[in-house]
Amino acid sequence: MKPPAAAADFLKQYGWGDAELLPVAGDASFRRYFRAQDGDRRAILMDAPPPHEDPKPFIAIAEYLKKSGFSAPDIFARDLTNGLVLIEDFGDHRMREHLDASPEDEDAIYQQVVDLLRELHRSPAASLPVYDEAQYMREVNLLTEWYCPAQELDVEAESFEATWRQILQPVIAAQNPPVTVMRDYHAENIMLLEDGRLGLLDFQDALSGHPAYDLVSMLQDARRDVSDALEAKMLAYYLADSSAAAAEEFRSHYAILGAQRNTKIIGIFTRLCMRDGKQRYLDFLPRMWGLLEKDLSHPALEPISKWFDQNIPTDVRNRPVRVSEDRK
Image (cartoon, rainbow, N blue to C red):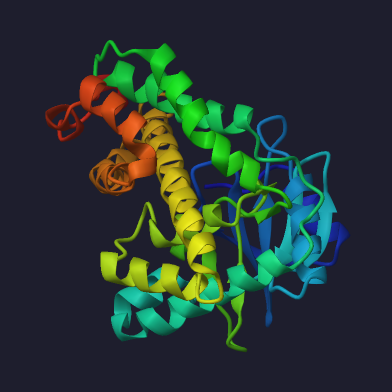
């Protein structure tokens, strides 16, 4: 992975001209990351190439989070024309790998990530677009647009949309006032910093919406198994100060947003394979179906659960997506 052509001049302009650039694992987007090392100094170079990526939302949310008292990376330099941003390096101590090596720390660290959400949800929301019905529907439709064709399924797309619109109404109504929703809050985007705080990453797609969204993103992690017992414990911890009625409503919305998110991710991971040739994302589909089925068991999801039973039965869900030879 080679740095972009504009990187050398950009780094030189801001006093990092002698830095060595080393690739850092990226994400599912067009963004790429490099660690800039210059003696004892380290930073991360984000390459967010236009027109595919726009670094301005990342910068704006990082500044909001810092102002609100959270650990987002400092922005050292920016070149918005070329999509280059030099940011603080949070190191390599990531929540995911730490818990893989030290599972005995699970309860304490998950409690810390839930505490962070509780604090974020008490803070004034960032000035962001609303997570509205149109956005929710664009996301769930990724299932019928990508997964269903990949499985050669002829499904009832109109009833799929109509049922989701019905189910989402109480969630949308409850987003008043909204909270800041980072949208990718999970164990691979949380850094464990030397001062004991949690470093936040990958929040450039943030919206204002429902407080259950980031909680279900963390507790129904697409890339890491979270036990039912731990999920239940942390959900109860988040709701410890809520009345019984408020907690019951929140749990319903949590299940709805879990189903919405997991439906979306099944579509996204299929698209990453079929369109972008990233076949490894298919390995996550069994976990995603397990999470989705758990959410669909909630009474609030009964109408869409019936749709899934009629259109994507269990034997299909367990069937691997077929990949053509040119995608392997």
